[in-house]
Image (cartoon, rainbow, N blue to C red; front, side, top):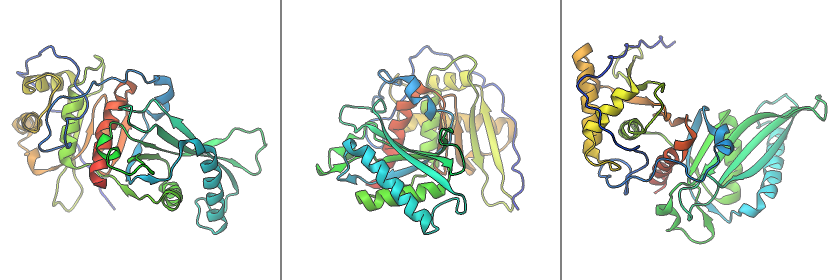
Length: 334
């Protein structure tokens, strides 16, 4: 039985960080995400997206997956796909393989398009899959309960889409909210129908540092939540996590002193930003965070965990976060 993880308090406000006036930073560097990346970053805001249409994606935990290109997929057949997936789920339930065995549920499947979630004209429109249920003993007009949601997307995924045959559709990033058993059954149907492969998408500590730096550079409201970094201490008999919280204005001011060119980012800048945070923490607690493992980053923009869990917190930065995640999914596929 795991013991409760202990937490260290925030190191307080960072001192000596000059406040420079620079525009918002967000997005991914041209080239591969991570070491060696560098160059201009795309705009941070979602210019054409309707926040009301994407609001349901916010403040939920989404598990990340990479998906290889879908063969012979057609966005004009979403109703047919919903019917076929519903029949597949019913058949699996009859075999005793579906979730909630012993509960007589009427499961409804819906497929819908999310055309706003694109980074370029070449991107395929995102696709949402939802499973809803109503007990067989409930009245016909009773409201259905949403059980599970999953969606496929490709945001600025030209690196992949430009290099696949015409019969394939690139939607490399899949996000799921709900029981893993539903991911298994829905994923099984997609794999059999479109000859694709699902794989859990983890986020390395290195990529988490990039997210911490990029999201810190975004302009947020004055009452924004603190930037929090969670580290796992290795080689201990009991699990131990260290939580490091920084006031968002102080984190932004530190980043502004590190970043050389507004709108651009390099690996050296990310390393220097993290080293400054580590040095400040060591001065207060005499702990070398460089000897630990970064496992979670939380900011006012989004939070990300190394296990491949993401939570979107602001709609105007949704496209920017999805660009990073699409890049990670493509790198795992390739």
